[in-house]
Length: 118
Image 1 (cartoon, helix red, strand yellow):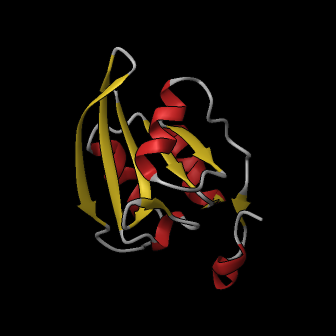
Image 2 (tube, rainbow, N blue to C red; image 1 turned 45 degrees about the vertical axis):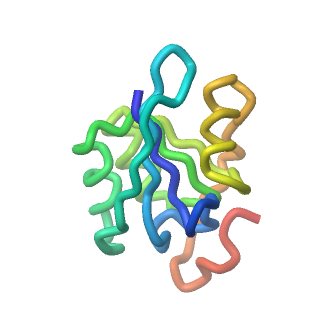
């Protein structure tokens, strides 16, 4: 299973599309076995969900995310977990234990992306 976290440094970012990078974790039998960082190739409507799905990502974790991205992830059968915060690896470990649940927090207006998720 591949789990991507929208991140700023080692932490979960508030807004998916404007993240610095995606930390992609591979998990087997409930444990992280591999971790790699993928630089955000750029925020263009509809691009990032397909970019990550094409890389084999099964789950995306972020602080907040726009409704269009959520829809594309849903169409691509990628589970969306929003409302996460803190250290990216810790968020993935919580997810693997079944302790990280989505808040359903969706950003509606890109010009107000600083206020997403809360």
